[in-house]
Image (cartoon, rainbow, N blue to C red; front, side):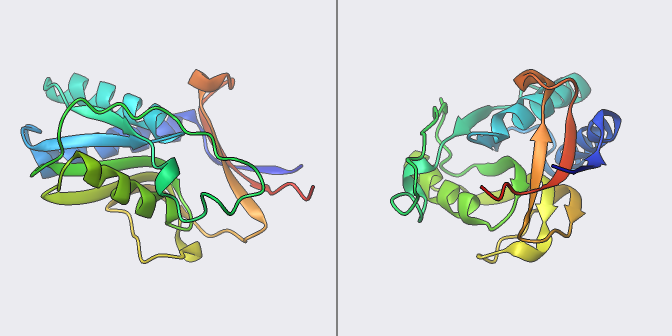
Length: 182
């Protein structure tokens, strides 16, 4: 299987720092802002961003993990059962500015499901979306990120592979590869 490197560890670090400065510029001291990493891959990105944000700003940033498995429109339509992950939110989102964080925006289905799941924790004042990779031309829903690291144009036969050192990869990296034909 051929892989094409899109972002290496150094480029990802630059993007994460840019995200932090954009968030500080737009949300100041985070007194009314929370960040939610979308399970299963958003929490790694979220943790990296929160750690950098707190280093740069010196402010504790409220964050949590949100699982939207049971809110997906394809929940019962898959050939295999979806595995639910932990939702870890120890605050209400009522009246807050919420930033949803995920690694890749593809069809928009996960983000739509996440917005449904989030409502169980209150009605937010505003919702923004932050993704590392925006697969721009492939949406099923009219969802666009407010913050993105890189936009890539991919074919339906391709897959964006995000590798994290925290998940056992040698380094953080983002690749475009062909989907398995099996």
